[in-house]
Every structure is written in C-alpha cells, then in structure tokens.
Length: 354
Ligand SMILES: [Zn+2]
Image (cartoon, rainbow, N blue to C red; front, top):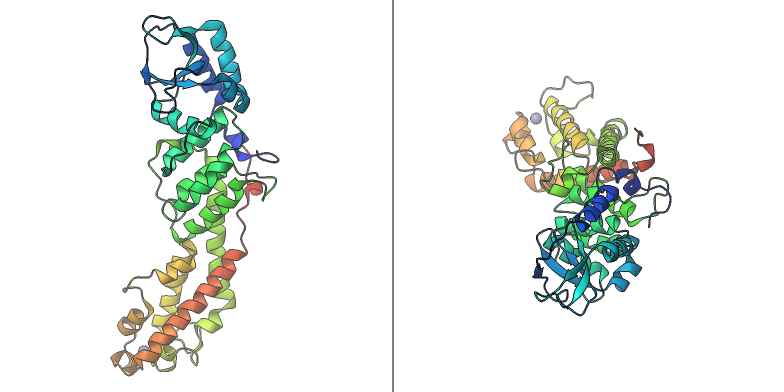
C-alpha cells in the first residue's frame, strides 16, 4: 500500500478504472444465462468450490467465496450481489446451483490473477511484461493488498530489455510525497537510469496496457532524462574541458600539428569538433554506456586516423600507447558522466498537476 498520495490513485481514471469495471461486472450479473462455460484448468476446475467466476470468453473458474472475500472487498461485494441475483446450474441437470459472477476479464487474465490471490494456485515461473501488468492492474481493481509488491521483483529482470514498460508500471505505483515509500519509486528510478542510454523520444512499446498509461506518469521521466542530459553537458563543458584538451595528457594532441583556430588554445580543430559531437550525443543519451557503445565509426581511434591530417595521422603515433590512453579517456569521461547523472533525482513531486 502506498504511503501518502500515490500516482496510482491519480492514474485510476486512466489506467485502471475500478468504477467502470465494477459496473461492467455488475451489469453482467443481470444477464441470465443457463449455458455452462468450459472448465478452467487445475486448480480452478474443482466443482466442490461454492462459486464460479466466468471469464468473458466463457471459462468457469471455481473459487471459494470466503477465501476471495477475505483477500478482496470487491470480490466480497460481487459475491453478495451474485447471491442476491444469480444462481447458476453447474451441471446440465441443474441439480447443483452456485453463485456465478460474469467477469470482464478473459480466461488468460483471470487465470494469471487468481494464481496470485488463491492459495490453491501455483505462481507461473515465467511471466511476460503484459502478464505482470495484468496481474497488477487486477490487484488494483479488486483491491487485493500485497500482490503488486510481491510481483514487482519479477519486473527487475526486464529492466535492461524493456525499461520503458518497467518504468510505466512502476511509476503508476510510485508515491510522490514519500520518495522511498513504495516499490514503485525504487523500480521507476532504476528503469529511468537504464533509459538514459536511449535517445528521446523513446520507442514506445506496442503493448495494450501501455496505451492506457497516463501522460502525467511519464512526465517525470522525460524531465529526469532532459535534466541528466543538461547536467552531463555542463559537467563536461564547464568543469572538465581542461582535462579533455590537455595536450600533455593525450598523445593524439601532443603529437598533432593540425590547424588550431578554436577558442581552446592549441587544440586542433578536429578534436574540438569531436568533443562537440560527443557532448551532443551525451546530452541526448546521458549514460556512461553511450561511450562504451560507440561503434567503430565514432571510436576515438577512428576519429584520430580519419580527422587528423598531420604526421600523427600517418602512423607516427605509438598505437599501443594511444589505444591505452583512449581507454583511459573513455574511463575518465564515464566517471564525469556518472558524476553529473548522480546529481539528478527522478522527482515525482515536481510534476505540474493538471
Ligand atoms: Zn593532426
């Protein structure tokens, strides 16, 4: 449960609308149907249970009303309504009648969700991001405490491969008054940091759940990314320009005799152009990984050999030392990037409320 006001509560009208869904559930109660649905898979095919949850694609999940009523006040209300309005035969002879609730969820979603709130069900070992989003959405809708925080650790495995989806799910459960209050804050921070190596605008996932994530949940991420980009650029330009352009530090500068016309004294033009390009790249992808992921066209050694036209470029530089110093250059630059990023906090409290 979030402490303080939570993005989840703000996002309810967009991301999860329990009122709408409850109405949907209730309205189907009035629809009389004597047709039997197909049995759900084990363990939800136990006809000894006292109620049926019927999925939208007509699969019957046999459940224990007492167990689900304790876990969820929404289920408790639904079962009470069902008792009043709808008893269904569970065999063709109609000899056994059970409470039946027609659900808005399909068989797959209901199966996933019930495995997390019914003690008879085993939790799936592998879940996709949409599966996890479904379980968390239904836990919110049916107000089952604890499921979201129990399932959240499964999202960490997707931080590298699908950071934007992880961020969206986590940010919907982040508190914006108590930064360390929820699992959502911690996970959203990790995902936002991972996304620093991706340029904005981000490539949007095609998942259905992502289409319902409200813009107010995404805005802190964009602000964080932009702030990190500016911080990295400023840190490099203002504080470490002397390190970057120190002729005695870098062999490609000490040996180069190419033209120097820039404001930085005795720094060849090609080097200055390279640093500008590097800062532009890092402003949009402010991560140390950006430097490590540079391909051969952008690599420092390639810049030296293609851009420098003096004797340095003709093989006079000691390539072994230059290679070693290039690694030192990248490591040093990574340190300055990290230093700049660490100053910035993913801050949900600075959101403009609409
Ligand atoms: Zn040169």
